[in-house]
Length: 137
Image (cartoon, rainbow, N blue to C red; front, side, top):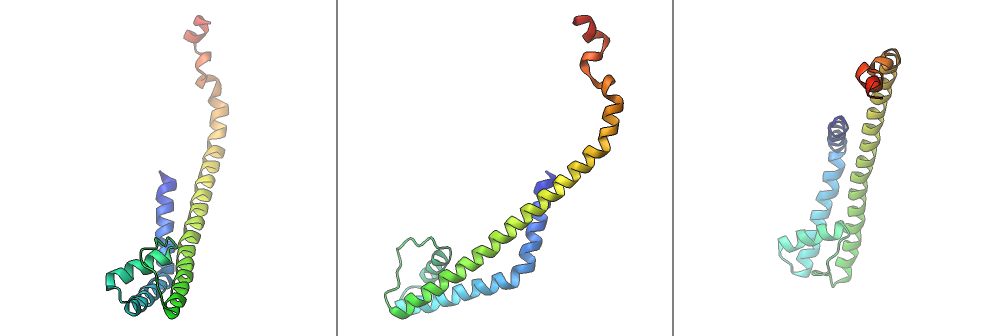
């Protein structure tokens, strides 16, 4: 559970640090999508939908730009989407690495702290060393 909480906390911190850049990319995707939608005579919602489907490189194909200018803008939207997604993936990988490292360090510390106790108490902790277990053997 500690790993999950560390991961969520670090992930939200990473998103907060990169929020201005992520919001800038999202704004560019929306604005360029609206320009394409206006040129292609799509509704505002259809243009918004198309721009994020293109930015995430899903590309269902239900809306396609037909003009050379709008096709060029769609390539730019796709590149912005790759950068947007790449930043989120990079944050996720870094966060998982940091949270796992923290969890491993805590586990190693606990193991190091408990080892002397286990070696001292190990004969009394062994269930086969009790008188009842010896009588059953």
